[in-house]
Image (cartoon, rainbow, N blue to C red; front, top):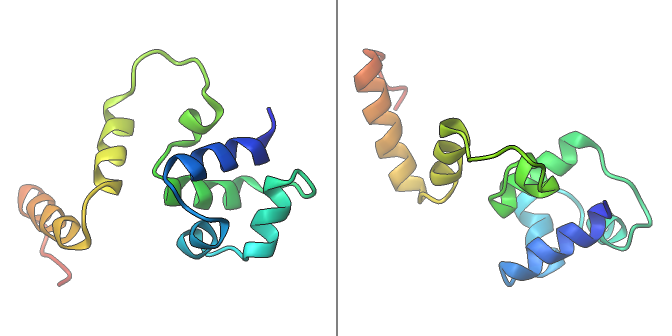
Length: 104
């Protein structure tokens, strides 16, 4: 698989520039552009940051066969789509369910 081309495809699908993706995942624009052009490789850790910013799992990034989306993958995908305020509310809800006290 050409990882750089896959990043470009997913980035363009969101309508993002390389700069916006770089800012979203905390990597330099020049590094990310080099990866997209297949001039440099990327570590799993950095690719994970890119995937998180793009809202896709590593499994989805590589389009690996695996059948249906697992409940954990579905939950993580849905959490990534929430606003910061919604994430805070979800965390409070989960804390209440588990009996933990919120750190807020």
